[in-house]
Length: 311
Image (cartoon, rainbow, N blue to C red):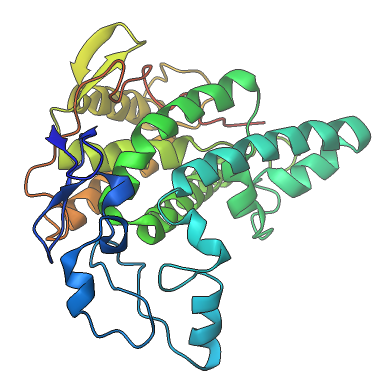
């Protein structure tokens, strides 16, 4: 734990300003948010101070497409889209629940076929590229989305703070899409649903397990609460998911036919590989302190829940 020099808040992920050397929480990590003395010495004709914390913070250009991107908040620290920087975990959670409501509307006023066309990545039509993304945010039932939301809520912000919002967004979408495509490829290989019109995959479990994989590499002893009761290090939880998912793919399944075990396994492997790649980034604290579970720290149930297989 470290104390923010501005607000005094105890933070599990402290940031040290490379310009003034102070220690700050996520809300005050940018130099312009803690009145950094370095601002007075920074010759910035564009009016934007490059904090060095977030790889997505770049000095905007004054003309062309780069200037437009800056005005929209895609570069620099201003613009209407600047609000989303540092909050993509919550943006994705909101998108999941909005999609869940849209699914209910389509099923009520439309048809199951329309629902599958819009939201389900299927073995019949893997070329529907929009479902590579929409299927990540779509879910099979309330329990499915609730458990995935808990894991992403508790663990997503830790990863986002470490790698930055841009890279976190890329990890979330890429891991979710690859996990879903892998599960559908297996269904096609097995001939399941290709003729009958069944099969398909929905859910953010692949992305959730990728997030867990990253945290397992960054801090394997991070304490989580299994079902909010039993404290265990995250590496134990990750290893358990790896074994269960591998058995579901290569041996007797412990989860049943309605769980996308390959999607889980692929998401986890992507997260482990990405965590190894970003481990030790110089712009992050030398020692990661994520804190324990329970109030004020990460905790959660036994994992990202069901990565729904056949819808």
